[in-house]
Amino acid sequence: MSLDVDIRLTRGELVLDARFQVAANETVALLGPNGAGKTSCLLAIAGLLALDGGRISLSGRVLEDASSGFFVSPSARHAGVVFQDHLLFPRLTVIENVAYGMRSRGRPRRESLELAASWLERVGIKAAQHRSLPSELSGGQAQRVALARALAPAPLMALLDEPLAAVDASARVDLRRELRAHLASFDGPRVLVVHDLADALALSDRIVVLEEGRVVQSGSIDDLLRAPRTRYVADLVGLNSFEAVVVNGVLRLAGEVLMHECEVEGEVLVAVHPRAVALSEVEPRGPDIHAWRAPILGVETALEGTRVQVGGSLPLVAELSRDGTRGLDLRPGQACWVAIDKTAVRVAPRRALTRGTREDREHL
Image 1 (cartoon, rainbow, N blue to C red):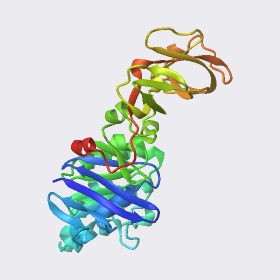
Image 2 (image 1 turned 135 degrees about the vertical axis):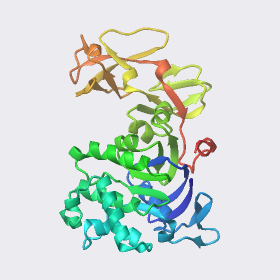
Image 3 (image 1 turned 180 degrees about the vertical axis):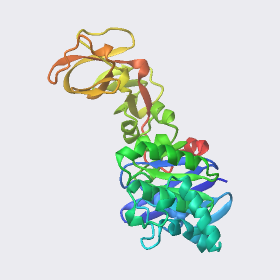
Image 4 (image 1 turned 45 degrees about the vertical axis):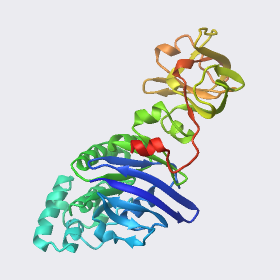
């Protein structure tokens, strides 16, 4: 059961023009900066925002077609939706909230309450809390109830908007693990909006990146690391990134030649992993080494070593192992040699914000 999404709509200053697919048993995370259109995409799939153009279908069943005016109501799309602020009914008890979707579809009250109770136990809400009101719950508990309410009626697809936004840091790791397990047990396509890369990695099978209402990249974290297509994606995955121009195979950065036989021409995005940046007191040499002198701007301790921010003509961040810092005077204001291995440099065409390239659509 696949979900095919082609959304074109205008909402205030946002012009959303996005196309992607979600396979059965697949969780896709929509990731992007604030205002990129992630939540608007989710609302359109749920039928809560009408399309100006495009088409949405689920396993061949058309849910909306702007060209013909065909529109399936939100309740008839059979989508389990978890909103960022949960939107639990304040005057209904926890168990009544979860039973509501089944009751609205004609299931008997007793059967609905029994199924609701089993779902609440499944998501970790104790029986003693079944008669509680939503106002008596913590953020994490409310999120669990909202998830149970969305999945209990056996929807055809699951749509979650920032499902961990209201959860405090202490509960976040456990809730990520639980949510991943619950989503994996759901057979239909799953789409979730996330703002944090860690949530996307923990919860999704694939990441779709939106910028300014357009899909700019789709793939696994390895795909994004291997060939980021925009500065936002490079920054997102923690790479040093620079915009440059390749002319006749020659790539220049900060006025110096970095490559003589670059395979990409024109405007490019150059990405370098911080671990591919070395610092030293003496000038490093080698056929694949590009080195220059630069001042140290900042130093901070990381889990696996030290992160050093370097200024100068090519500002970047280096991640050094504990062994890699020996003998170095890593004080802000001090100068050192900075070196990158040319073989570790990734160069990709700098993509304009489009509906997605042909290779994106083939991958999807």
